[in-house]
View (cartoon, rainbow, N blue to C red):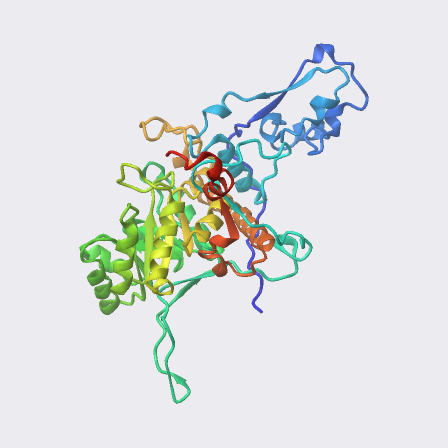
Length: 463
């Protein structure tokens, strides 16, 4: 059995004081000065060694950032002088999709490399749009000592990228066909190209080097490939412009490249595989309502890897009533299964993958792996404030970031995501993430539960 894949993490302190959600207001003029103050009984040790914390390299004890909201101190104070408040600056973080809670969770994972913990539990609704309306089957969680990140059993998170044969042929006991080339990545997550507002300074170099550090892949523009050739170390996927230019052909020495979709996509794929050392060509498609049919046509024509690109909120592009990635992936996967060609192509999905749970849910809906971009920027302390889009100075000076710091934070984030994937797979009783693809029977969908439970009483829900 191969050695267990692991991403090692160490604490990466933030460059700027983080913005936290909660704070404890302490009305000290009414304090009785109890010898055993309830604050020192904090289950997360936030107040226990206050003096030592104030003297360390941080120089402050940031209650607002560290507080988990367990309310132990608020409930047990004998004078009732403690109360919990929400930081108003926290409410201005992010947007409706990348919520303040999600941003804080990403910051924590990038700093510690650990799975985030919430002392007050999940405080939101138990259903919502997109991936929030899916619940995964955790029926095997009764064996926690053997599964997950602390278990003895091997759980594989590696995936193969490339075209697979529909069947094997043998002659005289020997394989008579040549299997197509495959690229294996130990994590079902690759890094997408960084959107232009954040592509500054050493950001792309940090992303490319992080991909090489953990063994995954990074999609890079032609110029970025040339600038970071030493850092990529064979883990870069050049995104080539078409029709192929001389500059594009110079990047085509990589074994794995990506091209945009178009009428000549299959012809361009053939040219690259015939005239260069390229082994695998991925076709990048903007997800639209007709994407399932287009993907099926490309697979029948010989496409080996297809990258479906949704918008930053995981919605279809160019549609008056766009579907979420969840539904578009299920449609695409189902179409390929019906035509008997699903195993001949690798599907990569990107856009709206904001948390580790989204990786597992996208694969459940039919993707083989996902590509991420904005979570990588959040790992570098971005607040999604929009200042850079408006041409104003970045509050965290993203252009001045040190590449080593960026690598440290991104590796930590991927370590936390990998741990969460192992926990989910272990709880579901699945030992290999390849088996998770399209297994919608291992999850529940809100609309199905609502229809089966209340449909006979109230009829069909109006959209």
